Every structure is written in structure tokens, then in C-alpha cells.
Amino acid sequence: MYLTRKKYVKNWSHNPPEKRFQGVAFKGSHAIDLSKLSYLEFEAMYWRKMNSIHNWFVENVQDGNDNCGTYHVEHGKIEELILTIERVLEKRDDEEAQALLPPSEGFFFGSTEIDDYYWDELTETRWKLKEDLEANPDDEYYYHASW
Image (cartoon, rainbow, N blue to C red; front, side, top):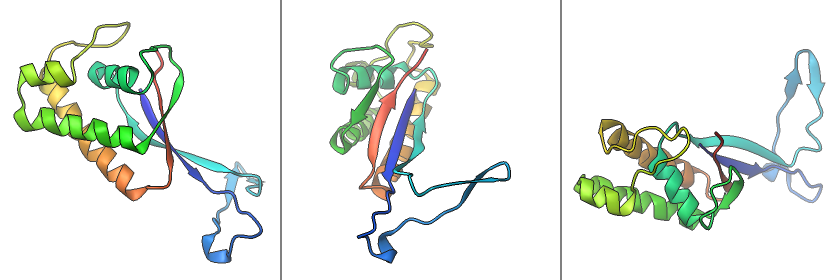
């Protein structure tokens, strides 16, 4: 399960120098021409067997389609997920967790227990998503799960 972040880096001729991206990349000893580069893609978050988060994306971003597709995630949806996680963590109650971020069964989805792994992953997810979103307000986000 991946949340990726894309940063637009196209250097248009009309952009002033202070707005241009600079860098050099090599594959082995061969320089790569970055003049045609439009986006850089980063891993914003990676989960393993955190089925409650996957289920949240399926229901709130993917219109119920659980099909290994890649889906654009609006900033508002990430903020909604952060707030949902905060509500669950605030009460740290199994009933609240079942209501707001329930574990779900599925192919290679791991445990459906609300256990230490569940709470630890929610804590890490909240922290990482909040930090990434605040640091990158102009970037685009995409969710993808594969199994």
C-alpha cells in the first residue's frame, strides 16, 4: 500500500531562475538529460498489512472499487484521514476504532485484530501524513495498493 507524492518540476523558459529546479542525475557513468523532466515522484507513506487504512481509501477515495488501481487523493481527503485517525487515537477505544477505521478482511490483508500493531501504525500514519502534507502543500498525492 503506497501513498505517493508528485512534485511538478518542469522548467519553463518563462520561469525566473529562482523558480527553476536544478539537479544532475546519472545512471552508472551516463548523465541523464533532465530537461524533459516534468515530475518527481516520492513515497509519502508505505503500509504493510494495514487493512483499515486500505479500506478507508477504498471507501473514501476509490468509490468502493478495490481493484489495485492508482487513485488521485485530494489534500482534503488526506486531512480527513488524519482527523479520523486522531479521533480514533484520542479515545483509543476498540468500539470507536471499529466504527471509524475498522479492520477489513481480504487477500493478504493481515490481521483483523485491533491490537498493538493497529495502534502503532495509526500513530505513525498520522505523524507522517501530517508532516508530509504540511511540507508539500503544492504537490499531488496518489494511492495505490497491490497484492
